[in-house]
Length: 399
Image (cartoon, rainbow, N blue to C red; front, side, top):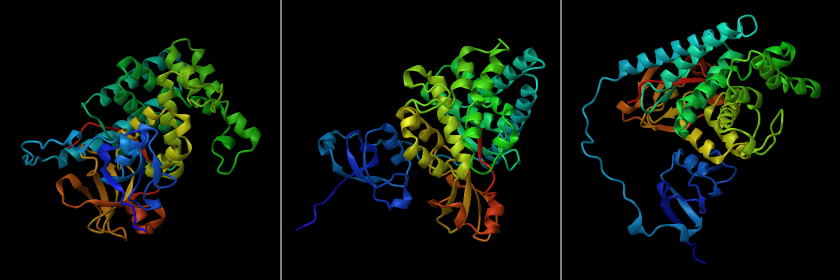
C-alpha cells in the first residue's frame, strides 16, 4: 500500500484545531510527543519558537485557508541597511543592566529592613525603586532581556523578588496593562516572598525533601507577608493581593485559599506565572527546561494567553540558554535582540578556551542546537559560568 503524503504548511499558517506533527526528534522539543492537537495559542507560539519552518498536518485540513488566500510576506524595502556600530552600545547595555540589577537588590534589602522599624521610610524607598523599574521598562518601545547576576550561588529572597518583578512587568507590558497596574505588579513582586523571612532557615534552605510539617509551615509564608505589610496600612490592595495569593492557580490547586481563575486578579495571575517560571528556572538552571516543564506539567495552572505571552517575552533563546553554534563553538546567550534567532552570545571552544562575546546579528554563524549543562566540559562550565543562577533585567538596547 502506498504511503499517504502528509500535508506540509509553514508554521505561520498554524491555527487552533489542527493536529500537527513536528519534523523533530522527541528530544528537540518540549512536548510529550511530536503529534500535537493545537488547542491553545501558547502551543502555537511555542512551536514558532522552535527551530522549524514547517509542520505536517495530520487532521483538520478543512481549517486551512486556500493557497490564494494565504497572506504572503511582504518584502521589505531597503533590506541592505547600513551597518551600525552597535557592539559598544550592546556591551554598555549589558553592564548597565547588571549595575541596575545589583542596585535594585541592595535597595530591596534596605527596604525590607524598614518594614517594621520605619514603615513610612520603607514605603518612600520602595516607591522610588518601583519608579526606577518602570522607567527602565519603558526606556525603549520594545524592551528585551539581558542576563544578570549578583555573584551569589544561592538566590536570595530579594534577588528572586527583582527577577520576578522584571518577568512580570514584561508580561504585563506585552499584555497591555496600564502603568498603575504595572506599578502594583512591580511592588507586589518585590515583596511577594518577604513572609519567607519568618520561616526558619533550617526549613527555607533545606536541600532535601521537607517533612509534611515543614512544607505546611513554608506554605504559610504568603500569610506571614500579607499580615506584615497589611499592618503598615500604606500599601494598595492589588499589591497586597499579590503577596497573599502569588501561589494561587486558576485550576484551584494553589494556596493558601485554593482560589480559581475568576477570583484571582490579572495582576496576581501574572506574578503567579512569573514566580512559577522563576522557581523552575532556579531548579533546572535552564530557561528551555524551565519553560518546557511549565508547559508540560503546569499549563493548567495558568491561562494559555499568559503562557503564550511569556513564550514571546523570553524568545527562542532566552538569556542563560546554552547553545552550540554552526562553527563548532559553544556559548551562553547573554542578551536577546529584535532578531530572536541571533542573540548576543558569550562563547568558547569545547575546552573553555578562546572566550569572546559574539554578536550573531553581525555574523553568518548561526545557533544549531540548544545543549544541556551535563554535555559541557569543566573548562566550558567555568568559562560560561553555566552553573550560576540565572536572572533577567530589562535591556534598553536591541539591534
